[in-house]
Amino acid sequence: MRVPELPLDPQDRARIDGEALTAKAAARDFMAALRDMPRPMRQLAVAMLFQWFAMFAYWQYIAFALGRSLFGTADASSAAFRQAVLVTGQAGALYNFVAFIAAFAMMPIVRRVGARPVHAGAMLLVGAAMLWLSLVTSRIGLVPAMIGVGVGWASLMGNPYVMLARAIPPARTGVYMGIFNMFIVIPMMIETLVMPLIYRPLLGGDPRNVLLLSGAMMLVAAAATLRMTEERGVAA
Image 1 (cartoon, rainbow, N blue to C red):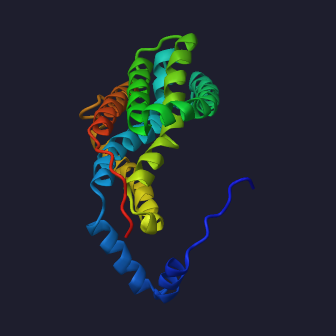
Image 2: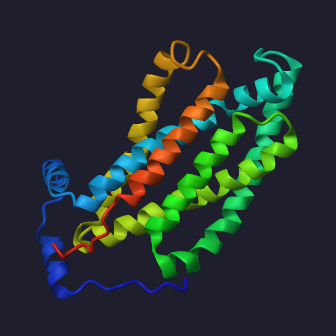
């Protein structure tokens, strides 16, 4: 209610009214947007691939990892595994609470130093947290890990969009935001296809090794974020 709507000027309104609202026009605009995608957005896609692959794998395997490390079970039908699922829910509540606080705390930092270094630092922190999770053997050890995951989750929900908004032409915000959301979904689809192929032969069938892989991928995402060039989008 407090945010004023920015009115369109007559030239923009005339341009929008003159565009055909057809599937063919939408497809043509989509292909043109892919062709003309700003370089910072292409670079950010690399970081998004690693960070969302890692997060999706984390969500899928964290209960199984805690079942082994905290309760010594790999039997999903056992009472011990049900305890692991309960602890996973409690840990999830903790990292979401941390994310709620961290999202507000990041705002002045991002204004001061920029979204790129803040996001890279958050990905470094969540990567270290996932690596630590693979070694945790007590519930108290989950606390620092969930703080790291919470900070990373808060950054994932905001800072990439800040970097994107600064790089794309304002007139094409809609199509590029839509494409950017594909950068979230596609890594999840890749993870769904790849993980069953590598889980046993490469990761030994141990969910704790999935957390190691996820942590390593978050570190790669941090490095990819730092390599990103920040450019202001130009009017199109």
